[in-house]
Image (cartoon, rainbow, N blue to C red):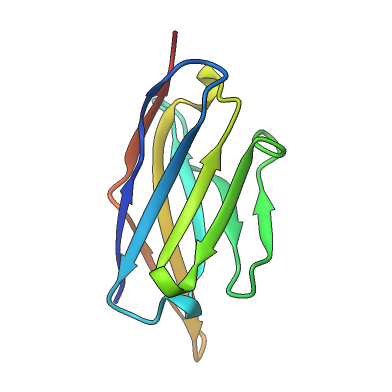
Length: 119
């Protein structure tokens, strides 16, 4: 089992930057596919960015060129660097971890961290 704890959210002005951090514990971190999701009020949770165990990244079209996901397996941590933020980025951001072993999926969510972009 994996425990995920997000941090780094807050209030930022449009055009500003934030870096979210997700600290994982409880299992071998390097074996997990990691991702960041977000959920704005009244909207469905959506995938923002993901990173595989091999470091391959993927981004939602809305954040390409502005957000960067990375992982540090030695620190059991995944990051989301968010630049040039807009009010549309306002949401609760969730860290997600998944691994598949013998066709069984094990996945976990963090508690979320609020990001508010407003002047």
